[in-house]
Length: 133
Image 1 (cartoon, rainbow, N blue to C red):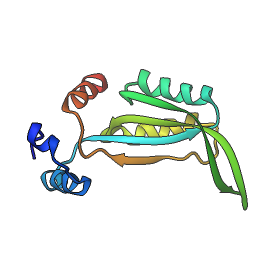
Image 2: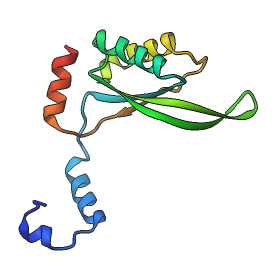
Image 3: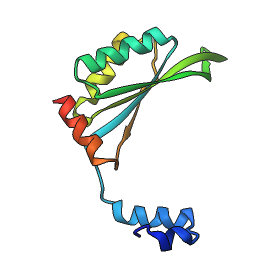
């Protein structure tokens, strides 16, 4: 659905817009991934981020400000203040990114989650491709 003055003036439900978008993109896939981890200090987060970017393993790493995590560790509920890293990379580089996280991280068992990016701004993907090559 194209948005114009007529459609902007009408009430479009989120479900309708989402269903239309999904029907166009069910087969969409990209070679890009978002890798997430958390660090116990801003210094460790910056160290990992810089290592990944300097070695062309990530186009960009966002470090989200301090957040609180609650989890089980060694049989007890534990609370920690952490920093979240959002690492933008290519699927071909994911194993190298994970290796850097495991090597440079201060935790014995660092969080690593990989999310497939199925859609996004083509200009951003072009920039990522340029930076990572």
